[in-house]
Image (cartoon, rainbow, N blue to C red):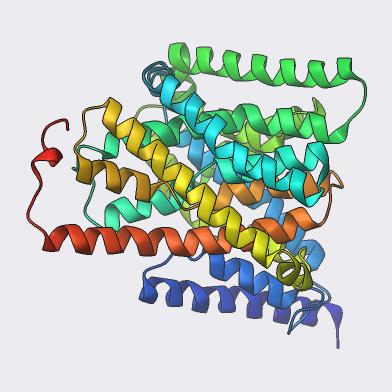
Length: 392
């Protein structure tokens, strides 16, 4: 068969299949991320329908998916909002980092992933899925609840931590002299600080320069700037995803909603491709080998996330029912756990990191929404507790 025809047939089949699994996820009320990962497992080596010609193309699409995910994440916050969230939620955020990275680091050491692989697994267990949590808040009608700003503040802190953790982990994984690692980390921190300062002071002016009355010109300008910045940060040994995140922060004012509307379809397409590619790179056989550790890790780390939600809610004077909702919301891990693991695999770390991450995200991204809906059902059937309105 002609190679071009085979490429189009494979890509068309993959994208149509993703549409089917996304529709299935909507029907059952779950995030599509676990199903995308399963699709990648089925299409990879050792899967049921291994692809042949389009894997290289999918790899490029996966890299674009990471960049677009982080760009859209940056659009969610202005520089001022990030600075304010860090100031107000630093204590709970730092405790969140320590408590929820610990299960992954401990599990990695026990499984023999080495110190660096264990650090990456700690990153996987640390960060909640902003996408899954946001969808749950909307679907369950919890937007106006008192605990919602507390949850969002924790997510903002985690997302900002991503901009620092990615280059740090990348520099550590690539090795080299201590001075070189320190230089990469310092460059990343300086880049974050400079972009935040520019975004706070000149975000509106930058946005006016980037966006015009034409959607076509605006999209091309935003994508071009993002890819250029991503390339520059990559050359500086800082993750390209971090560069994209910083571009998103730099967009402010009315331009943010315009940018979201232009980028959302591209983000959805290439993010799905990214999850499929991560599944492609994972040997399904490793999932059986790590099934028991994954189950234990999911139980422990969802419990630690619950404790963080409870603690943060208590600090803000939220009642018992609200604290339960906050803790339950934070349990799911997803897109950024996969990003961290993907960085580790690219750097040549233990392949079991991929199997552990796939299994872990499958478990938590499935159980998290189910538990949140159970809590919602139980609370809706019981009389409203006074702790919802006043500190308890």
